[in-house]
Image 1: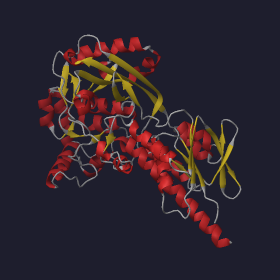
Image 2 (image 1 turned 90 degrees about the vertical axis):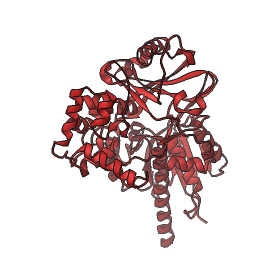
Image 3 (image 1 turned 60 degrees about the vertical axis):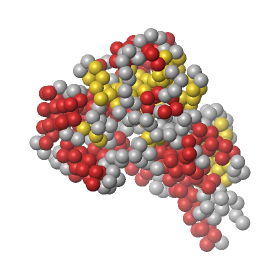
Image 4 (image 1 turned 90 degrees about the horizontal axis):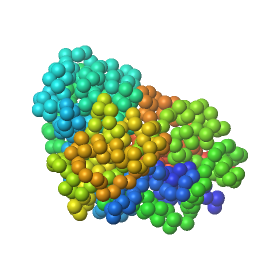
Length: 488
């Protein structure tokens, strides 16, 4: 019997862990591979991190799982965690507009409404802003032949006010940058689909809503919104997924996890294999390699084997984020706080960019007489906030919370998390760049990429990419073994 193939997975975030899990569970390969997972740091999980704060376990990185992409729910089922999944109690969101918080009307993309009526009733836009948005019904079709920014579509069709108050606050909080620099195709494909199939955005969203209703709340198009809870979480923190993966992987005799081990360079060696050069000077021979590290690290690792792919990878920029988890006594709210969160438009020039009302959104945090908030620093202030001490940062955020949310008095606890270079920037043309990278790697089927920098940065997307990378490398290794066997 031939020696088991050896696959090296570089990166111990959720994409790398999901890849290793898939590799160790594969039943299709003629021989179960040996797997080595390398993590440069001392902890696994990447941007999934749960911290004990004031007696509660709170997620300070990824906060929830998007359910319409099934990979995360499927993984929870495989790990026997699906019974612990919890849906949000509310998804209503408010935005600070025209001097107070106003609830976003229901509609596609978390608040882009299905007509002028909901806009008028919400009061988010001025009468002039509503009139400008209604011009979408008269404009010619929007060209989708090439990737454009989200701002070009929304601002061009509905006007700058609709962009600034409805869409930019949401996407700016998720992606850490303004809609002017966000790829429509990569970050809002449902809107691009509507723009491609309908002359008017408003008419397209009305059609999507009607189609969903006719289907009994079961969407039949790629942009219709499901009625099932769109998000889920684990009451003890999403790091439970990482812990359970770590436990399951350590039970596997054919897998080794090496923490504090950084990969530096990949080179080809005889017999169509690779050597992974480590920072400590060691070299690991591998039949296949999955790189689940940030794009700038992947660029360095691939520079000798696939220089053109490396050059494209190096062009993917990264943004930082600052999150403050704050708890208040329940009587600190001078007025009722409704819904799951609030957004503050960029043009308000506040340090606070968005706030998830955790104790409203998640049932397990609604008890105990506390208000739990997850505050995101506005994108324009992140670089400055990275350098602030916690006391300065807290003072500014508490001031904004008092003015925007009506919270009075001092918080009970504050926990600040700084994520340096954490968010890949999906700028216009992002998916085209990823397509070029994948073409540059076609001659190297035993090398695969996975992670937030490529085709979605949410937890489910990263899990799906990790699994796909495992299939690619396993398939290429199996085909190579078959060729070798036939030539003997």
